[in-house]
Picture 1: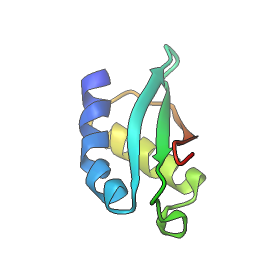
Picture 2: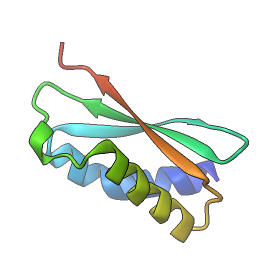
Picture 3: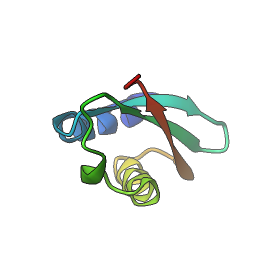
Picture 4: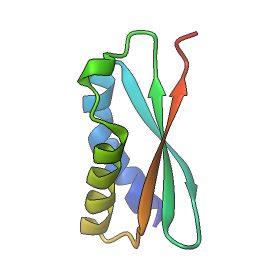
Length: 82
């Protein structure tokens, strides 16, 4: 499942990077919950990013469409701007 999730994140990564952000896979729990880190850089366009709830749902649906048994996605913001 990890490979599938990483492959999906790779599809989203260029769009995030265009806005100055990045994505990293956090943990995958046995219950199918996935933590994704949204890395906020010093030049991130915060107004350009989707709300975390909407982005989590989008990722969740895409993970499932790709065959990963994901039950939920949690977005955690990591600010590296400082």
